[in-house]
Amino acid sequence: MKMSVIGVGYLGAVHAASMAKLGHDVVGIDIDADRVAALNEGRSPFFEPGFDELLSDGISSGTLRFTTDWADLTDCRVHFLALGTPQKPDSNSADLSYIQSALASLTGALAAAGASGGGEGSRPLIVGKSTVPVGTARKLRDQVADHADLMWNPEFLREGFAVQDTLTPDRLVYGVAADDETAPEVAILDEVYRAIIDTGVPRFVYGLETSELVKVSANAFLATKISFINAIAEVCEATGGDVTQVAEAIGADERIGSKFLRAGLGFGGGCLPKDIRAFMARAEELNVGEAVGFLREIDAINIRRRERVLNLARLELQGDLAGKRVTVLGAAFKPNSDDTRDSPALDVAHMLHREGAKVTVTDPQAIPNARRRFPELTYVENCEEAMIDAELVILGTEWARFRELSPTVTMRLVHPGASIIDARNVLDPAAWRAAGWVFHALGRMSPQHSFPVQQPSWMADGCRSQKKRVAQPVAARPATAHANVPQPTAAHASAGAAADTGTVTSVGAAAGA
Image (cartoon, rainbow, N blue to C red):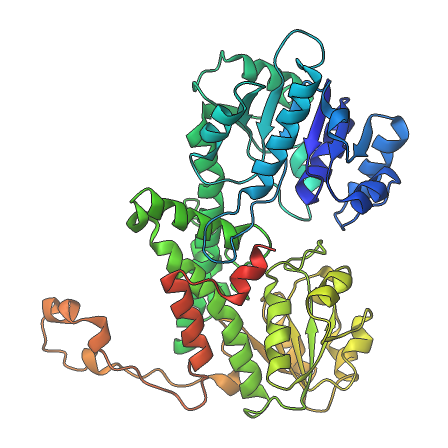
């Protein structure tokens, strides 16, 4: 089938190449002429395992090409929308301007050419893959009704596994206006995905609104699970517990499962942060904001993890970061990606720099993107070289290269008495301490940071009834400050307040970039 993919960023380029792999004739379009030229030459503008080979195969076989000319799309039967929906700079809402602009250009080209979907006498079909607020697809369907049909087919890609997730997905979700398996759009998309469907992959046909909610609900749930275990990590640090052991035990419960239960620096990237904020904003517009109000705390917990690492860095370096040499391992928001959008590791590096630390960042793939975001930082490609004479090392992105570092070898590179903060809980504490490192991992208090658990005063009177203890407001229970445990800073409080009030922080703005 001849088809187009509109927008050939990360999602669109992978989808276009994957559809060519399935045997379709694919043309991708983008307004970025340099990106289009690079893709036509078989050069990927981003790092994604397996994509370079997929792109090269499509170009060489003649089944995949890229253009900037909308007229090249008028004989396509299907048009996939793969455009970004970043967070607006002045609110939590999703910016739909890229989709609106693309649809105006597409329908204009279709009208000018009198297009009818490849000359078969049938209408072109627009298939949305972008993550959008619920209710968007039906409005867009009405807008294009004179020129094409429209359905929604949300993507569920994981960066680092995008090719695999496109060619061998765990499910396909269709959203159609009538919520009807017999809708003609269903048959067309079945033809597109025939090779995938024939392998037994589940396919769900729902209404437009339901398909939109499936995507945002999935992202909200994943974000909730990550922030939940990070909240437990905070409690573990206040009590001497070990969050990895808590996660191991609760993850053995099949109702919970172990995935996304690794406490650490939190989530980032171009999806989860902005998607949960857009979900909250849309819920407020629908007057059901209270239903997803818990997502504000999910967002706040996530931001708070970065401040926690900054506080630990202050503690390890005797409270003064000025002039201290710090190496941050990782710039991408996750391993196997060069995406630095809302990267927790890069955000921590920038916060350290603002406090006067001499920060060196290393990453196997993301240095070019990181340098564009924060040119004031020092970047070194070789991680061993980056660690030379460091007083503090922070593992911020769990690349295999960093997980496999030798604590003994690296101990010889750094400043005597250096510390390491494992902000992803992937290193062996015993091995690193045995090699001479001062080691700390989030949610697992190291010996030098441990403290005796004190009984709260509100529990002191054993004669009080259970009813009285439960009824006492949490705010009335005095918090015990421990001198050797970092306390929340003004910046920390500010970040939390911003999340609670819906104010866009610098981190939030970065997520929409």
